[in-house]
Image (cartoon, rainbow, N blue to C red; front, top):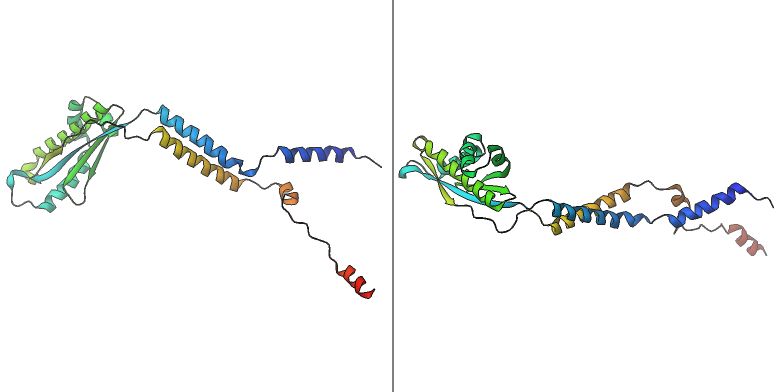
Length: 225
């Protein structure tokens, strides 16, 4: 009997590859684990952020009767749009003790479509600085509105001062770890779906049924006999 070295060498490699090949679903737990570790590390390394909020409200100036709620609501929307501009931030930077560029990055202004109220929120890694920035910007906004109240008939009053935040507003490391694990598991699932199918899996993969040979000739012989 002739021994074929090529065939003898091919079969062990094929069997070793089948034994060493990991199951396809390993991408899911591996992606989730890597994502959870990366998300938790990000949450631990990034400094916590604190947010303080101050509110002002638009009212009629000097008890003027020709100004209604619709006018106050419209001017509140307008003052909310000009709050992040340099004219307001230039006055606020003196009180807050930080440059205008820092104010522009950390301040967010929101208005209400139903009430003439303006909300000024400031975010910083220092809770005291976040409080000072929110109060400084809202105070500068009240001052700017006071310069034009004779023409507009609207002035701004401080509704609520910003209080020092006791807890950070940024996500904790547990939440970032959970988000990272979910994203990693999703990425692993996408890689599992997009991976190319191997030829040997298509030919001799597990669970592939064997088609029996046709038995028509044998049945015919049995009938004749």
